[in-house]
Image 1: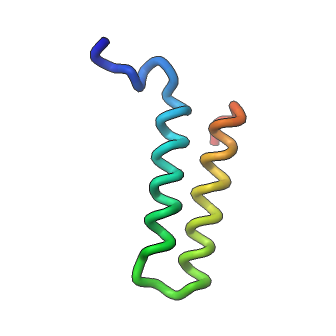
Image 2: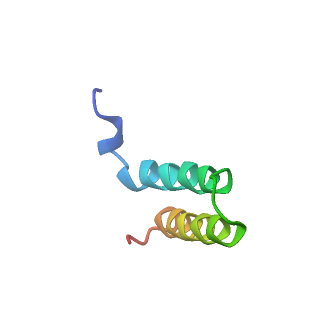
Amino acid sequence: MKYLHALNPSKFRAAAHRRMAFAALHADSSLSTRVARYQHHMTKARALEAGGVQ
């Protein structure tokens, strides 16, 4: 199988948003900006894992 992401794209998108969320915590920004970006990406990851597409 060449394209595993085609089987469950929301799972891979959720994982990508989790990586972006943790990267946001380590960014060189103010604390409020980092937390806002973290929360944004984690909300999207949770929605994708729950089956909702955003």
